[in-house]
Length: 117
Image (cartoon, rainbow, N blue to C red; front, side):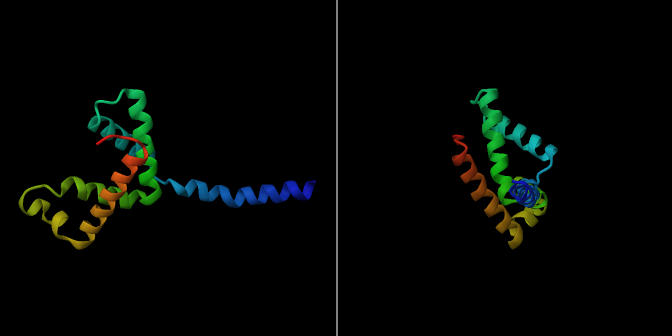
């Protein structure tokens, strides 16, 4: 019985670190995203919005690292700036690719978390 318990404990210790890495967004990033999501979806009540917007944040964290999310989100928000200020976000191929992945992931997360657009 002791060998079985030790094996189970060892297996759990191998799996637990992977769980922590699955969603590596900071709390501040998650809260900021949820608040922005709630603001963008005012028809939902607070309880529904918190749960659905948190769901979207979790889906985004499954795809992006903290840094990738911040870069893609910034590019997404800044791409419509006029003239040269927005040019780097509109013209750079890597930034456009990141924004494209962000848009697709974001739309899929909204669908999976049942937020109407």
